[in-house]
Length: 453
Image 1 (cartoon, one colour):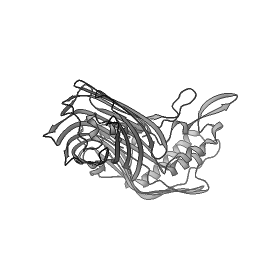
Image 2 (cartoon, one colour):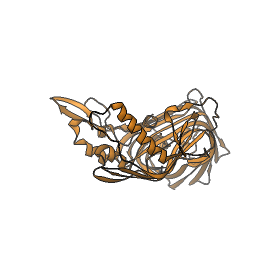
Image 3 (spheres, helix red, strand yellow):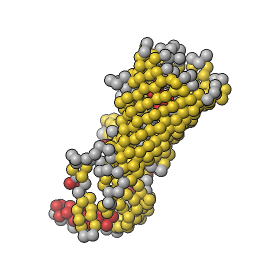
Image 4 (cartoon, one colour):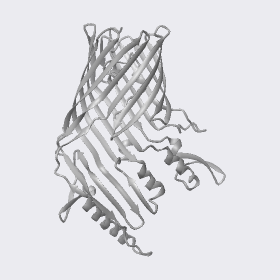
């Protein structure tokens, strides 16, 4: 799961939000109208976006220590860095989020209708994946359970979807001050894995670990997951999982919408707001469902020094097998739904020097796994020439990780080119290692733009 996340919940590149000349920024607010009368993404190099994030920075996990007279960079779990364990734990939020977002536009275009309307279309392939680890889980790993501990693991989960999106967008200028827009999306799901816990509590003592849980693990994917029958229950055999050659790529379908508006409060001040990815996918094919709906306990295994290691392993497997036999039941493969990760954008830009410079502020909030994650971005947007428009910003990610972002848009004849990078770290080691980094995020593309305003 960690490999999937570091390789997961819908993200955006905040730098692009204020890059007016980039037609693809309408994905972040459907009210934004491209400056050209017609744009077409070039198929060989269309709009693409990658965003991967971690809940901590490298500097929180790796520290510099003097070991035997030599300066070394070690993980905070190293014996020489024991004092750093508390610092790492205190940096964690209530729910840590590992995520990856990938978007690739297979086809995208847009054109102006009359003087006030603008239509856009995109057909894209998307991967949205997130892993969520509660802080209590890190406490168990770093400090153990103590004599007796009660841990809330309800937010433990994973939600990953691979799907195609067909979007139809329209933006309309109501008057000189107000513009509104919306996008309707048809979604075709290929694969999904999702957990949903109503409760998941662990009471851990020296004699017994007792778990009380209720929830589901649902998978819609081209795999066959065998189950072993044990009495009246069936338990999953992950070791016997096989790829299914005979399956439908259409694992599910769904819909989504984006809504947005811009309002010119003052001649030089424009406000904007948008809700994106409101929707769901209903998964109907290639489904495996496991249910956790019981209380169970694990009281360890009997061990005497000198016992055969193979026998110890066998006893442990049997004990854990009994636990999961009680805890997991194979569902009937019934259909289920997964929600898109909805994002709220609220922004404003004040223009100076005859619109050659724009100073912007963006507050963006992502809603995922029953939690909210917020970024605050301050942006300086330079427009000195028609063919060149650089952007520079500073972002505070989820209230903790300050980074900078840069972007450049260039209009060379009919060619519109842009590239933007978020999460450029502000802290570096003596060897110029980006210890302040907690992820990567970049977006770029080339399109043909005709009749630019």
